[in-house]
Length: 66
Figure 1 (cartoon, helix red, strand yellow):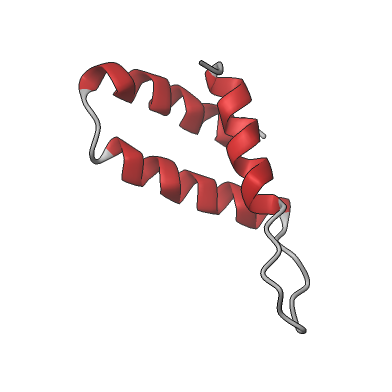
Figure 2 (cartoon, rainbow, N blue to C red):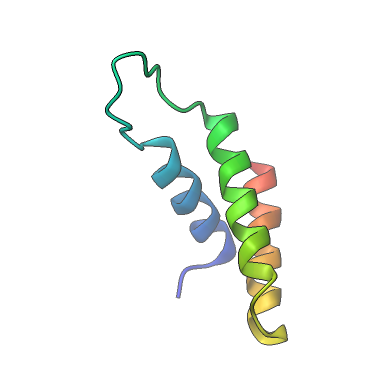
């Protein structure tokens, strides 16, 4: 399992590298990718148990540090 810091960076990086295949697409900024990742983690936190919640709370903190 990845550390929270590693998971945070991987999640933001995946979103940042999205290719939306549009002519007018200028890419996703790092800041936008962070916001998307935070939304995803908030959704995960709404449906998981307490054990996993600690891990994902730590991931969220690491995203905010990026």
